[in-house]
Image (cartoon, rainbow, N blue to C red; front, side):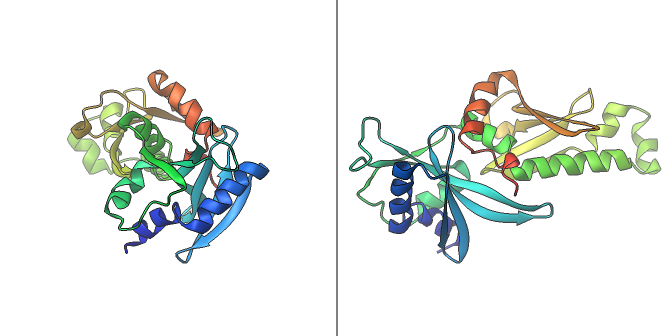
Length: 233
């Protein structure tokens, strides 16, 4: 079993499901989970869902990455209702190739659409760390040899620091705008037009902003604790 398949399997382990149901009853905010030689937690959010989150580390420190989340079927009773499990896009392929069996106390397994997944990608820890690196490189500036080739045009200079990466299982492009700040777009292959987020830097740090079209999903997913850009510890 691949490590990422092992991560997905934790969503459906008996102990995880038992603790998630108990947490719905008790209202406790956090429950630790240790499985597959990895550290997880169950986090009950203000929205009411419970996330399974993996403890991760990058160059900036520790943070939690959501793997998926639990909800009760509408109208279900806490004592007998079945759980609905949503697997985040980053782990959907691993779920599809996972050879395990979904337990009987799980009513259904759901996935998120491309626009929902795009917002989670645009405001992931990986994306924001890349944005910070883009600003750092832009501040450092280009070699004179490159400036001589492209000319004294600030927007062309900024384009040299554009980045691409995979976030939440999606290929995304971070492109400096004509105004000098990065914006997040899905790769053209997905056929989704327009930016998902814009990232500003000032003396107080970084400001992360959804594009108006995606603000409703952004606000919802922020309350659901699905945006790992805000999950540093």
